[in-house]
Length: 169
Image (cartoon, rainbow, N blue to C red):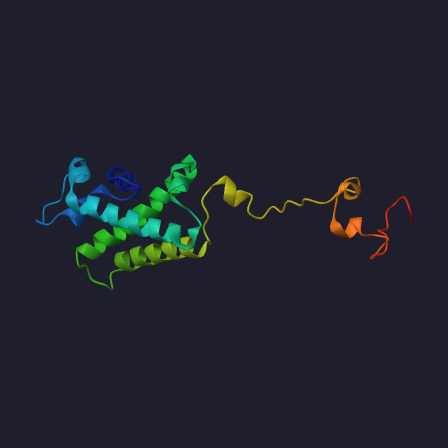
């Protein structure tokens, strides 16, 4: 399964030089054009996709079909969440100082994003979620009631009192 975000999405959201340093194992910065083929960033994006999907699918709020039917804005939002998680994973991969402000901020963003998805605090733009709070009433019309053939209606007069209608008040 493909990731929900690509290295190009990461480059749009984060500094290319920082990403190049985080993806490098040799100490030399990875060229921004080579980030798409870098195994570190693709692995982090795949892992981040799995974590975001696990949060989305928890409680059966969303399914795989919902992810394919997202609007452009919601898809960008999901890509952003995947990039936040992948960025945290890239920072964690480099064994940076846990007290570093960049690490703390990335971890906080990552934890908040997944928590909001799990709890339903954040909802994606789907028609089913927009209409979830709209109540539809299917009321019985006065005209329909006499046409019913209920057992209680058929036994009226013999065992049960007659139904009060608008005609025989």
